[in-house]
Length: 448
Image 1 (cartoon, helix red, strand yellow):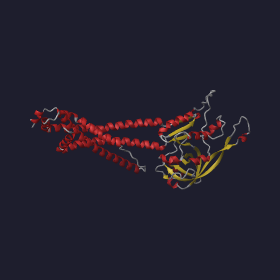
Image 2 (cartoon, one colour):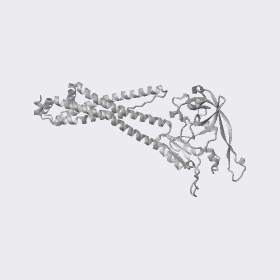
Image 3 (cartoon, rainbow, N blue to C red):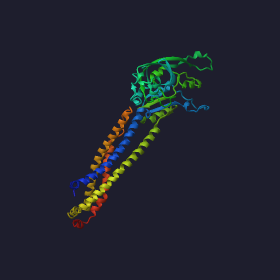
Image 4 (cartoon, rainbow, N blue to C red):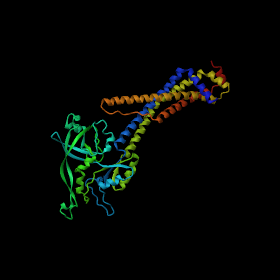
């Protein structure tokens, strides 16, 4: 029997019991819809988490520190004859790291504790310098006001909790000025140290300074809560402005007590951003070869991928339960079709149809139900996912949070769900097809 004739016969047989076959197909569609909806939720949450973390700059960043920072307090082992002294994390080191392949940006983490004056009152706070690239990190989404107008703008963004200390209405602070009082590190020429052979070739003094800044925004998150800092920044200023202040930081005390003869200021830590997370491992290895300490979040990202893989597997298992129930409906429908069509099967065999032809006929009927059920199930699953996203965004909107996409239906999920529905339907048709093929044509023709 030709495949086209067999398909036509199978479709005709399915039309004869439209209600029963439609309900069976609908059962397959419900099973596929539950599978697609659950897997789309897992895929959507994974994409949401990955995009947020990638935008935060954590997965494409390498955090660099001087190796002296890795020694515990009070532990200063004697250096051996062939051991090189630890390299200083200064401007020369920053330039060298910036020249590495696939490194697009190297910036220091500048944080210093100081005091500001607003409305004639003093407020102690932590100041943090923010690079221009932090605008794309997602930390400033939904902020009140705007981001810095330029890299050298004398502007400030307040963290919401600190803004509430300045005014009960944080939004009213936007556009007002404040005075930043800080201690500037000013270099001292070598001659000023007295010229003693035991004195350092240079040093620095602390000079009080003031800086007028305009408040341009209030942010709810903590964008400056990064690695290597000495606290969360509550007053955010452009990084270039922070560098120009030459404010004294915690690591300056380490420079004074160290045996280093360098008069150049050093950084507590640097952040090297790469073109993509795939370049992090190579850049991290190159930085370590330079003599610096470096670490990234590669291990955390691997753990995250493992978590979502297990999560997707569990969602797929629970979603497949409904499809497994639908297979029982297919078996029941085809078994009932055998009882109703025994004379038809007998006629087919009497006309020369082989057992394999009868099997293929029932296989085609099961496959058609699985195909239609799979297509409908994907459509229903997509609608369920859209409903979940819509409901979630309504919930977030009521709490003044940005909208998100919690579900995603990629092309591989569409094709995989349809193929899985057809495969399950064919498996469900094994028993009815084998039973129909084993019918004796003489007994089938005498069946009333």
